[in-house]
Amino acid sequence: MTLSPDPLIDFRSDTVTRPDDVMRQAMAKAEVGDNVLDGDPTTAALEERAAGLLGMPAALWTPSGTMANLIALSLHLQRGDRFLAPRGAHVITDELGSAAWLAGGMADPLEHDAGPGRPTPETLSAAIGGGPTGPYYSLRTTLLCLENTHNSAGGAVTPPDEHARLLAVAKEAGLTVHLDGARLWHAAVALEVPPAALTVGVDSVSACFSKGLGAPVGSVLAGSPEFIERARRMRQMLGGGVRQSGVLAAACLVALDRIDDLAESHENATRLAGGLAEHGWEVNEPETNIVLAAAPDLEGRLRWLEGLGIRVLPTAGRIRFVVHRDLSATDIEEALHRIRTGG
Image (cartoon, rainbow, N blue to C red):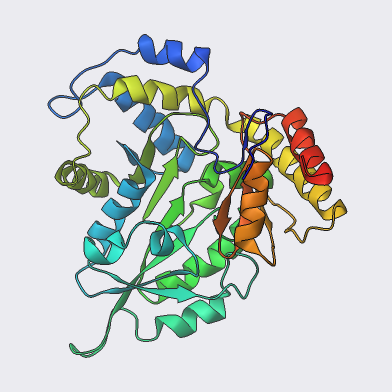
């Protein structure tokens, strides 16, 4: 395979961004303390701000979204419990089985019969069955995990009214609800609502600062004060007790200042999808920053794009292009030009 001599255009993920000078300066100047012993002031400020944005009483910084989700599932599930999540949800397919191995839960996927990434309330109700009650020898369903936006469904958004209907079914059946909001900021910008409008009724929510917002590392888990105190202990058990975490939290605070910038990534994703469609590609109509493209020869098409200097990843049997803050409209046009001309 001959690689293009032109600079690489990296669509693999919105986690490939690099901190700019403003973010690096904030990290260098961060006020810090020992976040395990007696707290880190910058981390505390981030947790307070994130909790407010997410509409939750308290929050906890974690090194990764996988850890945030694992903490939540570990606290919400008892060993052998069944939990429900939309098919292809990150907690099922992308976290290396930690939900089963460490949290002790058994995942059961829900079909997307309400639209990409979204089950209908009727499908959810049928899947819950007896819920958390029943004879001692019966399987118990105790938790619903939602994902907004839904990564493998192409960054698909769940609007507040559909979220509310799913929550009503889950709560009526006695289920706890966790929201994987790794890209919740994207959903909020796309729907033009505050992030807290998308978390109403959930028992816990995770959100990421390194997906789209440009921070080098970090997520947050939010919930009740009691839940967060238990989560802090679980974070320590999992090795997430970072000492002077304020150096990293400072970057996350800068990232939160840039939520509105995500609209530009959405516009560029729409531009990319339109250009690919004009060239005969079968693509989704992106709701946020992810474009999924079908390919009859997936591996062959991936190698061809790599040869053009366009880096992508396969997702759910399709090619995933993720647009982010380090890609400009000019980069999008250059990528489309290489695809049209074969180099």
